[in-house]
Length: 407
Ligand code: ADP
Image (cartoon, rainbow, N blue to C red; front, side, top):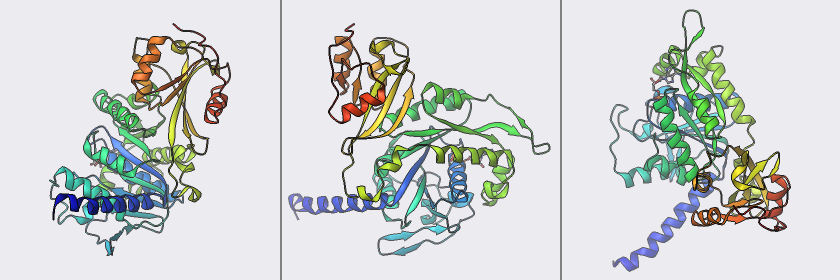
């Protein structure tokens, strides 16, 4: 068969795969991708305990382990050797209880000890299959234990899961790990993947004798970084020898030690996650099914609660995620701008995923730089609150006047 004949079949198959993936993703209200700048920081431990804690909070939870290099969820939850059901193209997950279902690449491997050495396309195909073909039923939350780093694999996971989804970034307190997280946040920004927050793991040590917390290493790097990058800080999980022994014994730490400082720390993280106003939720409502969801981000420099007249000299930026179709504001985050150097703000706002800037005034050079970054600039905005301006822009009712300040 010639290549020309084969192509339409491949395209039809690709479209079918895409539709199936999207249909599956629509049965899940909230998707949390647990990421880390590198391996060994406790990403899988955090993913597993978050999933168990969310289930304890009464949510219908799926835990999906697509860490192709070292799927450790079956071991952590005592599910090694469990068989998964297969019906047609669908795989049924392993149920820990009536609230928590688990699926891991580890269930498909012949031996838990064998390293996974697969080529890129095979890994991509496998990740896609896992996202498409697992019959979760309706879920409140899917927690995804993603491959570590910011390379092709976590990129595939983020792209396949699609929007809406959020990242939970796990780090340890040391400077080196924190530097990796900075890359991780930029990675999320470049994908317009909202960061639900940073978790600092292995932060301080809980003495097994007295239960007191001792700060063995430095502490607070995760919080400082979250502040610097204007993303939420979800909390610190202490180093707790019980986390290792529970993991080794395959008993979820949270179930095992509900009164410990570590368990409390996980509960606090979950409390913050559940309390968050997530833009993600809004568009999963069933009435939206089948509709293309057109999202974008509007950035507005703010001074004393109103739009800044001098773009480069504002206190902070309000960033609105909006749905152009519904003309709805889905979420708002506030960001401290970097120091004022030529070109820094357009680059920074581009990394934050901004598509439109609304401001009182802006110099010509800055306007050119925004245009080069593919960002639309609206100058001459009236001195209103950022909410009023974002809403007016969405409704096509923004009355822009003269450029207030062109230097
Ligand atoms: P990753 O998924 O980032 O590679 P893991 O979750 O597999 O990391 O954790 C690596 C090791 O660190 C495991 O042995 C785990 O039990 C241990 N660990 C993770 N978090 C903690 C903690 N807060 N206290 C003590 N040990 C921990």
